[in-house]
Length: 245
Image (cartoon, rainbow, N blue to C red; front, side):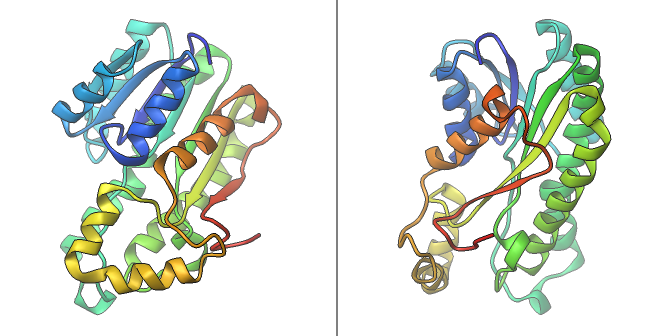
C-alpha cells in the first residue's frame, strides 16, 4: 500500500482506528475521517502519514467537500474503507422514526454519500478499491437490532450492485461483515444491560470469543490490496464462524 491514498470513516475509534493503523503500517497515506475531530486528530498523530479529516457521514454535501479537498491535496484517492456505524439494542416496537432515521443515516446513507463522492476521483485515477463494513446482522438478522440489520443488509446489496457498475473503471467493491467485536460500541451495549444477549451470541460462535478490531482491520486491508485484485462484489464474514457461507 506504499503511498496509496486511503480514507477511513469512523477512524477515531474501534475498528476504524485499527484500520487506520493497518493501512499506515502498510505504507499508505491515511485520512482519518470522523465526526469526533479530537479523536481523529489523536489517531492520526499516532501514525506517520496519517491526517485527520473532519467528517459527518450523514451530511452528503460535507462529505463531498471533504473528499474533494483530500483528492485535491493528495492527487486522488485509491481506497475508501467505510467503517463508521452506530446502533442501540432494543425491540423494534420500542423504536421510533427518529431512531430509524439516525440508524439509516449513519449506517446506510453515510455509505451512499462517501461512495458517491469518492468514485469520480477513482474513475479519474483509473481504478481503486472500496471496502464497506456491514455486519453478520445484515446476513442473518440480530434480535434487538432489526433496523440496524436492515441497514447492513442494504449495504451488502448496494455494494454488490455498485461492484457491477464500476468494475469497468477498475474499481473493486467488497464488504466485510463482522460479528461481535470488542469495541466501545459493544462495551456500551453491555453497560446498558445487554450482556446476556452478547454472551448468548458468543456461545453461538464456534470460536467462542469476541473478535478484535485488528482482526477486522486485516480483512479490510486484504480486500483493499492488490492481493485481492480478482475479488469484487463479495462479503467476507469476520465473525468466528457465527455465520458460515
